[in-house]
Length: 482
Image (cartoon, rainbow, N blue to C red):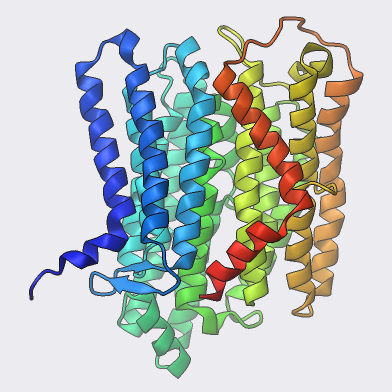
């Protein structure tokens, strides 16, 4: 069989990322400690180049390559651009934090880039093998990043928990994959969909396979009851790592759900027999547990961890609707959530300084008196997370709830609304601390100009996307429509 070089064109974003990661690794060998900024600059420029490459190879048709293992479609193009831009933002926030704590090493960017490569492989996977390769590449890099600060016992403990539970979840996912492969005889999602539509399989084995698949997926998303790692990892890892961990991988996890459940097993989403029923249980539990436990937190990183769990519940609502509108709403929500999460942790990083970690809610007190502009940005981010109009978070929730109501699951939408109202409390509590309490620490914020500009864009984007949501929504609709 002759190799066709044109097959490599749709894979250029991955080739670009791999080249970039290897380049950063090599450059880092030859530069001195005070020249480390070179690794950072190469990484950021490389990420923007990869965005350009992704847009250059994008097209409206679907291409399946490498004997059906790899797919390039409008959904993969949009999600890859989302992952790359969110990674760019979180790396920018991380720079000053890492410099102040003597963690500004090339390895941070190498591990980060290999994690992004894993995400792009997951996003473009068209077979169980490819998706698992991408997932493991992402997971192994994240385990190392969580323990990046070797002097932090909390970081080491968090990484250990994440590693053990992650290995367990990977085993569950593989077990599910092996059962589905055993009963259908294929690893590719397009062929799997054909086998499922014919009903040419052992139903009991298939149901067990889907159960294990959904368990693995729920762990990667951080859905209840497989959420145990999320608060510990957010709390123990350096804040610079959490800004990355809490944003970009969520986009990849959404892609994982879409590829596994929608591309391959869409026929089996009906009722309580299929995966729709499983996702309903996970979504209700995630929204409930996430919002209720977040109220009790005094550590802002743990609070945001439980808030992540509740947002995952909302993303699942869109997917379980099983319609194009639902998938579009879930994709919109995921992209918006990644931006909100990166921005919130960006503010926490800005409040931290050498020898001081802004981790507790009390550290937010009186931020308006210390820096009114960034108090306003945090207000927009918190309102967006709570779903207060006219921020984009409101529309993200509205579109998801609309999709659920349209498939006659009105009770589920009401549950979502009820938990959103409960969740609004802990976001508004942060706003109350910022504006109505006296600061415990009068030290002025020392934030680099690049971080100031990016935090401002990040905060204002919540308002702009909220006033004009149609642009991003139509991009998501076009991507799903394929």
